[in-house]
Length: 225
Image (cartoon, rainbow, N blue to C red):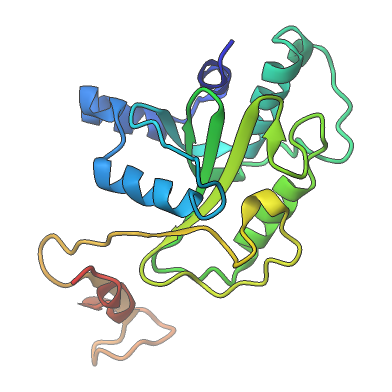
């Protein structure tokens, strides 16, 4: 069983099926520009890294699925049908996921993306803590799961965020900090708008008797010029 096959056995995300169906055969390959950016980022940690343009990818891949897929790949498909000790709590039964996974023969890239929101929230910290706490039976401190090497990349518009990575495992960063790629944001039909509830006098209030659309300054500041 390959890494891709193991991940595919657990991938039951309808949003992924929909995107694949909508893109058709074009979904079989990563975009050249995107692949180049991922490769350049990971080479800051592993100079020999070369991305497979035809690598399998999936969106919103649950961490529970990731744990089970890596366990199955290392210990055999029959083992996951047998109750496994859940200590530490590596399978949580939650919807917590990785935004994008890219898998090839011996490489698994985990990408977390942020657009308008902030990296300062608890979401990233929670995911990093969970990935860092995985036992060596799943992935070791160097990001190795058997013959598979894991990489962790952040993706957001503009410059890399300044984050405290002192608690991150070594495979999730470099000595200089995080691995990051710029997220291309394109305004296809002019400035982005957001909807807000307001009063008849266009003032936001707690009665919400009216609504209006206004320019979203935050989103528009992220658009690639």
